[in-house]
Length: 276
Ligand code: AMP
Ligand code: ZN
Ligand code: FE
Ligand code: FE
Image 1: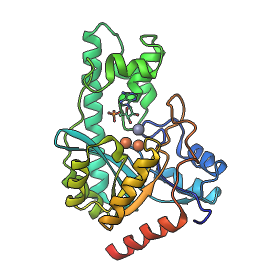
Image 2: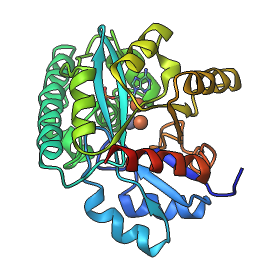
Image 3: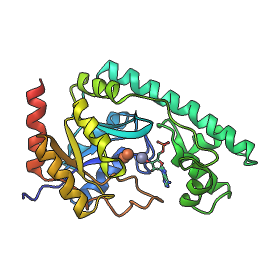
């Protein structure tokens, strides 16, 4: 193993993270990370600012995104790494996803209003700014307005899957997200597979994902060995990272603790060359 720390899964305040791209990069540097990917949900807007800051802190920045997709009625997150952030097609799709997230937020707020909770889309936008709006922003609004004590309660009472104010995101097929990532010159990885059944993971491999996120805070040692075995069996790539969001979430200690090596990053880079 080399001593390079590579974290290929983090979020900023351009999706549901707390820190701005520059703050995240500074913190990553402080926590010993040498190469970083910002993988915001359905957004690559962090990269407008991130390159300059990465340069200041001597961090190698790897362009990335986390896209929510559907497979057999289950939500599957795909990471696109080494994507071309100037791809018009990618930008167009991500804008569309974000608009859909905005409409969904309004539907969630409508359900909350019917449950006697008076928050408005403008209240939520104060937390979301121009980012990809999601349930965490609504959770923060519920906390601020005193309707719940903490983040966990917001999800348990209202926002969690199958809770009274839950609304699904639009359906994006795995195939169309893979096409999008491939056409933007990127490599596709299934994020945190520990949350999904094994048969779905096999389906994703059949659909042509390039790799698996083996290292993730939600994975225990057995799962790490298991996913590494699958990576080897199917000749896939291994990625990993902290899925750091910062702030009130429980992941605030994770930056710098979950990473892959420089050698593993080189293997991923080699594959991007082969795809050209
Ligand atoms: P969204 O993309 O808007 O559906 O929001 C998904 C995010 O909400 C996830 O990345 C988690 O951070 C958070 N989340 C979802 N379910 C829960 C839960 N039960 N408890 C806490 N956070 C959750
Ligand atoms: Zn998130
Ligand atoms: Fe995710
Ligand atoms: Fe994530």
